Image: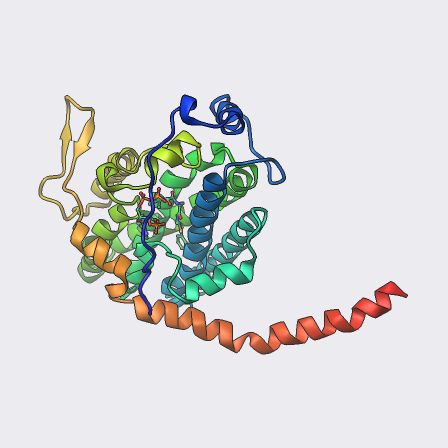
Length: 328
Ligand code: BYC
């Protein structure tokens, strides 16, 4: 029930000569870097892939409020509390922009929520891990928002107009989020030995799950080839993961913390860091609904939906009452 049990359905990319004239004209527009807008013709697969990705993305923003929301009342100072509150509110806003972008593809927000609640749609695996200490809030901002930026900046150039435009605003806010996380890590890493230990422990627990945010290795990514041909995705999963490692490793060094990977080493020849693959068995278990917090996270969303029923009913009743008045 709580699993994100959707079966992946990637299919081979059609070559230009296998396409219908309409599909070919569409692909040529995408190849030329043109933006596709809501009312324009698009292949059904393109529309479905966008609904899947934007919907999952929106759900991630909303479910992603839970691990951090957990710390709003326990943030160590008033300033930290205000900052965290603003960040969590931003995530709600991101969810709303993204649900709106998905709605332009002919799916309603209610349908998307229903699919999430029934385990027919996924959200990012990272939010199925608990935030046990204040340092975890630093690690989430630094690593989770850091990974999100790495993935989302290229999406500002994606082929679907409403998604690309939503990304512009989201990315601006994500950089603030990443910096506030790094700032928490700086304070902790330069604090008492106990605080530094907490920072290291948070890095130890969030490193692998952050690498998993980029999705399975290209070899196991069922959607990448088609999504990249349609410019719904601009890069492969492994390419972005490598960029994230390259950017983050020196930051960890600056903090005086150790990334929990004995194989992490700068490779002069490649011009990149070598690193170990995360535990992919764990990743697929989390996707099957067996992560540490899957049940809790989805349970909280379902409860919020049920608790809000009276508000939705009230609003609908009010709108129905006003309709005849507006017609007069
Ligand atoms: N978790 O063929 P692949 C945030 C699924 S939130 C769960 O490579 P694709 C924030 C994938 O969906 C930021 N599932 O897929 C919020 C597919 O299954 P389906 C979230 C994952 O789509 C609050 C299957 O595995 N960012 O920043 O080409 C607080 C095969 O994968 C994951 C986005 O959503 C995963 N990690 O590529 C703080 C970015 N990875 O759908 C921060 C937009 C893969 O066939 N999304 N799967 O059932 C994307 O860029 C792409 O969808 C992904 C995956 C790179 C994630």
